[in-house]
Length: 388
Image (cartoon, rainbow, N blue to C red; front, side, top):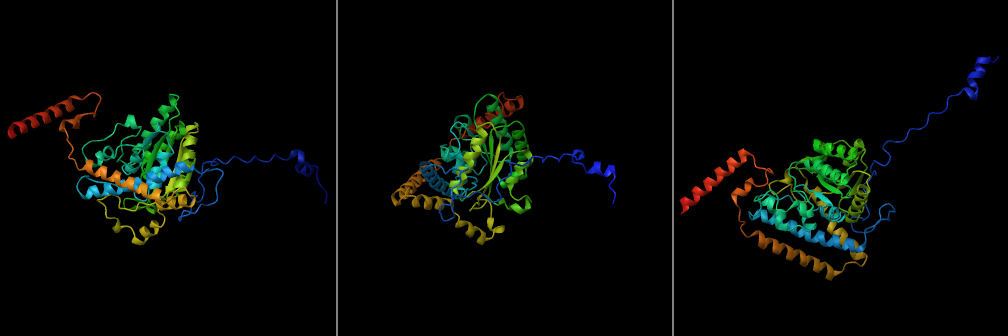
């Protein structure tokens, strides 16, 4: 066979096109691990340590245990107050103590928290007066605490609106040269709302130092997670916006605190937002007005009792010699004192001024608001004369 000059030229190395360079993976550093991060087994046995997630100091974990125990007792007392008619409604966070307390401990006092209606335990763990926390749920004030003093936004009932608020505040703080971090609590149902996606997108574009913390407790009231998303996990929603994400066992207190601490450090260093999904479970109904037995299998609830975050951390700390019977009893007694004080103060009938309904609606009251206020004032005066 005779080789033509043209064939030789085509085969010559000098005429071959260079290999196409491999494009960088756009998802590198954004995707969560396939399995949720876990540092403790359900029975409290430590799992192999991880260099990328250093374990929090023993003193911090003891404080976490204390706040979780006191928080659980607060939660039980608040639930009882609804049955006594002292609260209009209460969304329990029993079973989610590691998430509630871990988020607070991962932050500095001058960072901001943007809670949902379910974060009463997180707010008390942050040091806010429990009576002020429950004022909204009792129905006698829009927010019982001063958000600017405690660096905590009012508890948010509309789903996901706090995602945009957190992004805006975090960006504003960064713009002014402060290293403040905002943490927004989110339920799994809120990830189906537009404000969640808008908040993530804004935060990513402007590198706002905000941590979005999704507590995936498997149900948006009665809607199971399978009816909300087909994604492998909610943490994967960050990649579409260029937001790094992680998923964690939300009933593992050590892992929750370690992962959130890393997320907060990422945001504080100027790298932009971070999305964390915690796999957890609410042991009680959505609120006291909900009948969870209509959509949850009792066997499912019982299976999650074996993953109790309080028992898990207690077993771990006992194994390390950081807790003993006396210390456990002391913390339990503190929880009882906390509940008794709350009970006593919530049993006092609040003094409410009906005209306060018009306060803080606008910085400058509108003519319509002034007219309405005067109408109510006149009705109150007429009632007072009638009683006299």
